[in-house]
Length: 360
Image (cartoon, rainbow, N blue to C red; front, side, top):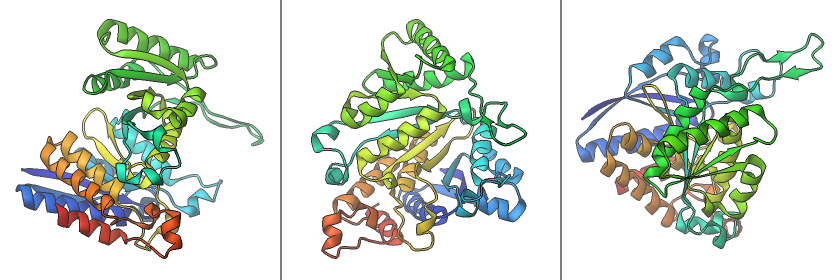
């Protein structure tokens, strides 16, 4: 079967990690008689450098004409370290999400058994952890208007804005997902302080009572949820929350696995879905061939399973990634301090990708 994939490597380590995901997908295509056609587009700092727009129209057109989007990372120190920059790489990511209607971000968190010692949490804390964070992606503080500074530049303001419609559509994603899992949704908010959180709580409860009464639903304030994610993460099944809280909590939850370089994500919405690792562009590692490609490879597995329906092919990728981890064919970020002290350095980005391809 032929599928067209928009490939957006982006900035920093993005080109290196997406190259390995492409190699893995080519191995899958060869084994299972598929055809994946990759068309590359620019986004982020590289797009600003080339045409002044972090998400140019030609990239948007490419995404809309593709069956799915595989994305690397966005960000560059020359913009991060310049608070006066009017155009920033991250604006491209926000524009892409909004333009493609990607309103729901799914981030699965499930530790690899062979890497439990890499987690900063005790083994008994992460036993049985298997959760998904469903984050609303196109509303809230990141998109609300008005925003800006006063004339003197001494005060700044951002607006957090949500509508019932925005809340309902992402809540449906969480409830439907829970039906195929442990049938438990925890909605995280700050309803004791924020008016938008009170709207979230009221709207989600109404939807639950009318259409999803078979799903267990509870509510948790975001500060408590942040604590529970490190003290009792196995409590959660599907965690539903708004944009800012989801951004923070999903990165916090990543430490459960021992490395942010292991976690894939999917952003879904009106038409085409986008798949990406949850980590950033890691500019310090750019060009050194040491970045962990597994999160991007697992994102590719999510892509072919969720967007293309290739379940057995996705399972083959996941199995090959698991074997690489169990056999110790991993990048330096997954080498324990004790092992590093003994001189173990780990494998390169390319070597990890090649091993996974070989095992497919």
